Length: 384
Image 1: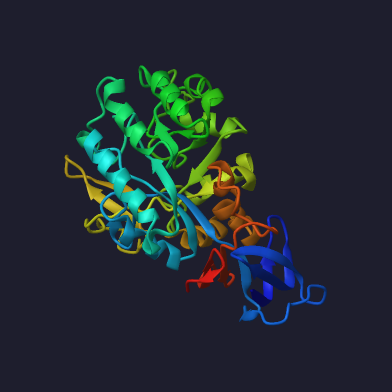
Image 2: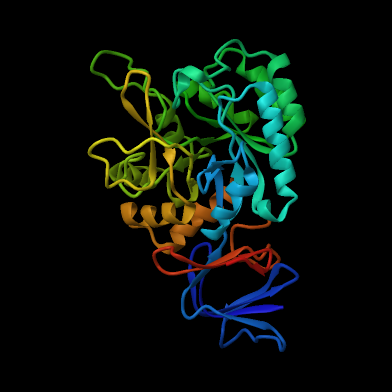
C-alpha cells in the first residue's frame, strides 16, 4: 500500500486541502482530509509537500512524442508523454497512410501496448482516412481522396477494431455512412468525430445517432460555407458549438495561434468545461519557425507547395496545454483537470480512470499550480 500525504486533492468539481490518498493493488482505496482519513500502518509514504494531486492526464489525440511519430515507433513516442503526466494516450496515425501501412501501424501499436514502454497507450485515435481531402497539412499527399470503398477500408477495420476508440471523418464525403456502419459493426462502442471537414450542420447531425460526439481540433481545418456574399455561413464550428452532445477538442498553445485566446474564452462560455477536451495534437516536423514566429516554442510549422508556411500540429504535452488553457481562459486547476483528464476519459470510454474516486485506477500526478509535473503514478506505481 501507498499513502500520498500533505496533498491538495483535485476532485472533479472541488479541492480537498490537507488531503491524503491511499493506494492499494493499483487502485484508489481511500482519500479525504488528513484529519479524518487514517493512514494504514506499513504504507509507503509519498509526501506531496502541499502540491496538487490530480488524476493522470488523458490525451486522446497525439501523433508523436519526443520527436518520434507513433506510427513509426510507439515505444519511443509514449514514454515522453508519461513523463509529462499523461497516463493514458491514444496513439494517432496520420491520414496519409495506405491500407497496408495502416495495418502495419496498428500492429506496431498493439505490440507496444504489451511492453513497459507503451504502458500508457490506451488505444488508437484514427485521424482519417476519410476526411475532406481539401484540408490538412500536406493534403496533396492524401491517398484516400477517391471513392469510399469497403475493399480499401475493411482490412483496416478488421486489423484494429478492438483498439480503435475514435475515427475522424468528413460527414460530407459521399458514401461515409457505409463506412460508419461497418466500423460500428466491428466495434459498437467506437466514437466518431467531425474533423478536416466543411460539412453542414445537417450532415454532421445526421451522424450523431451513430456515435459522432467530438469536434476534432475545434476551429482548425474547417470550412465556413458562406451562404451569400458578405454573410457568414454555418458549418462545422457552428454545429459543434450548438450541439450539447458534441465535445470540442482544443489545441491550447502558449501563443494562442491554433485557437485565439478570445475564441477559447468564447468556446468555454458556449460549451462549458464539461464539454471541452484538451489535446496535444503533437507532431514531428523538422521545419524551422517562419520569420516573426521565433518566440513560438510549442507549434510545428510546415512548408507548403506554394512556398508558404502552415501550422501542422504542436510540440505540446498535455500538461502544457492545461497550463495554457488556464492562462488564456482564466480556468482554475480544477477546470484544467476536468478538460485534461475527466472529459477525455469519459468520452472515449476509459471509465476506470480520469478522476479521483474510490475503486478507479491509481493514475495520478503531483503538480504545482502551473501544471509543472513533479511526480507521475501509473496503476499505483511511481514512474517519475
